[in-house]
Length: 221
Image (tube, rainbow, N blue to C red):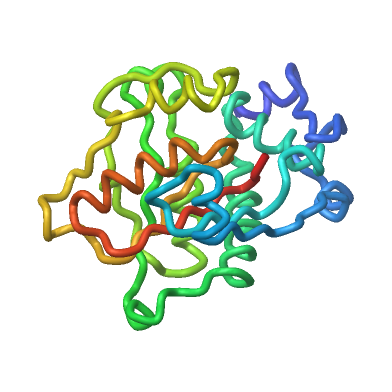
């Protein structure tokens, strides 16, 4: 009853501005998804040393509706968009993920990029964990929060790459003792810009003994 009253007083508006739902069927059809894979060589050229590959469901800059969906999900705190984003990310995984030959028979572990507890308190949820759970529902891969953020790093969106690197260096640690970390980990986050956050998380995992770390995001850009 309370939700009905809220919908009456504050009607839901979709990512395209329509009333009634957070995303319409027409908007789903209009969203431009161009899955992208950055391999180890491409990442090295960007100065990323630890993450082995990055897969994105689409481009942040080339798909305005995808961008709006992520912003609404993350900053508008609309967790009901999680299944949509998780579905697009799963599609990119099925199309682009190539396990290392040595780990082909190893089940990957989904690890959400962590928020510092202060940021999680402000936002109310960790968007990366929501996405990881959605992907897990579609793949049956387990979710484990095995990276923690050991100090707040502030907002990264308006920082340069060098500023991000300074802010994020040694900001993460694995929760696993060395030798007990999963061998194959897929990091999950909503967006990748410079990749510095993902690389620092991968460093923490590899320091704990993880063999391969692939990152999957909803958008790159």
